[in-house]
Every structure is written in structure tokens, then in C-alpha cells.
Length: 352
Image 1: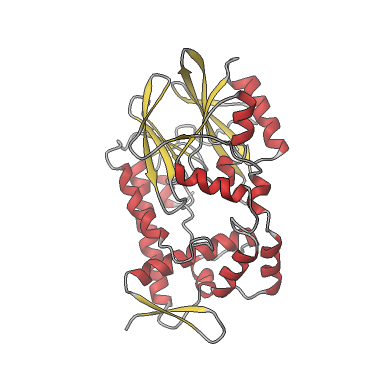
Image 2: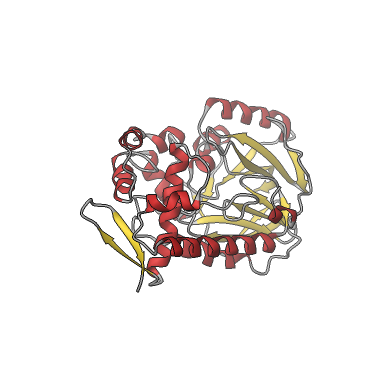
């Protein structure tokens, strides 16, 4: 455990939900853990006791990726953790595959509506029906090669990942209920305030209930690991890190003792301590990147400075995206200049 983790409190210690079962973490709130086929090997999903139009049941928050083994675990959850009641609604925090992958299956399985933000719903619809989007395909290969990824084998593997997103999110519900920042979603007799954040996803929704003493933070506030904030091919000139850091202000006013339910890692207390840690982390990385750019640097040159461990291709794409996000923030602040060199690679250098 690193020193920052010692400043957070984990009420359940190292206890994790058993596969296909749930742990009660607050009144009417249950924790389920599903596997992921990545280095980050799990996602937390949440069951909220609910009643809609006189029907008792559950609201599910997030879904896992579309895999048969994950569907089988959901069937076990339905048997073991719903007290014989139906799923009434599916809430999705954002459009990344581990969060929306099985939304259509869940909604059809229970004849339940999907609730999420408009931007993320629209992008999920687009990417689930197309190829070459979402960290794979020719567009991704061109994007990363432009920023210094020159290994032919890695670029070919990126091109081959043309179906990356639809493979994990084969379909999205044909209709949805839109949620927006500041909305109050009534769940189980409690109001859950929608907090929309940017930078990690286009329009990420977190949910805070003062009555429950709980905030479902999704990927915006995580323990142990930092939220990935990346520049990808579909928005190549973006400044997502600024958007992410600005979005953290949306959690101001939430009491420090509030239980945080993250999408990865364990439930914890210490919300504002963790937000402060994230702000300091990115300030340190920005300073590190600026110093490295005393000489012209491509994004690929920055990756080993920011990430000391070996990276597989999946991790490398996110590392490249995050390194570029830091470079873009410094560029838009006027601290870096950039140019396209004769080899077609974009390089950044500290402004004179």
C-alpha cells in the first residue's frame, strides 16, 4: 500500500464480493464485482433497491462487457442478490465498454429502460455499429503513428483491432432516458444528484445521495489508480486533462465522510483527500513533462517518462493517450510549442 492509500479508509478491508454474489455496503445498496479481459481485471457494479410505478425491484448501475462468462455471473446475481425482485432500470455512468457492454442484454432481459447521458449514449450507438473506432483500426494507427509510435508490429495489431468496441459492446438499447448534470434521480425513495464530469469520457455521470451517504463515482474518482484521461483519434486536438481537473470541482460540498463507490478498486472514505491526491499527481506529471520537453519530444518519447513499467499494446494505447493529454494541456497553456517534423511526427518543446 502506497502512502496515499494510508490516507484513505476502506471500510471492508480486503473483503471482496464472491462471484455471482453481492455485499451490502449501505442501506439498499449492494456491491457486485465482474471480471474484465484486461490488465485491469474487474469492474464494480451496484444494485440499488428501488420502486418504480408501484413495482418493487432494483436499479442496476453499470453492466460489464459483453462476454458469456459475465452473462453467467449476472444470472447468478439475479438468483442470489435480488431477493426475488426484478431489475427495473439500468443506469450507465458512461460509454466505455466495461460500463455499457451488457446494457442492451440487461434491458431486454428485464424489459427495463436505460438511463444515461445523451453524449455518451450517442457515441456508444455510433461505435457499436461501426468499425475502426474506440482504440482500434486504421484511424487509431494513424493517430498513434503521428505521435511517435513507429513499431510496425504494434501498428499492425492496432489496425487488426478494427472491431474492438463492437466486440465488447455489440448493441445498445434503441431508446433511453436522458440524464443531465444536476438532475435528481429518485431511487428507492431517495434523491440521487447527477454529477457530470468530462475528460475521462464525453459526459460521465456520477450519482450522490445525501440520505444514503454514498457517491457512486464511476471512473471519475478511483482509489489507488488514477483515472485515465486520454487524447484519441476521434478528438485529436482535445484538452481532456483540463476538463477532467475542472470536473473534480463538481464534488465540492459532498462531505468527506461520504462512502465512495468506485468502478475499480474497493469502496472507500476520504473523497476530498483523494481528489487532492489526483490534483497533485497531475501537477507533478505536468511539471515532469514540461521539464522533459526542454528538447523536442514526441508523445512516444514521453510515455517511458510517465510510465516506468512494461506495457502491453492495450496499456500502451492508453499511456500514449494520457501522455498526449498532458502535452496538450501544456500546449494550450502556452508552455509548449509543437511542430510536425519531416518524418511526419508531432513534437513538442518548451516555449522560449
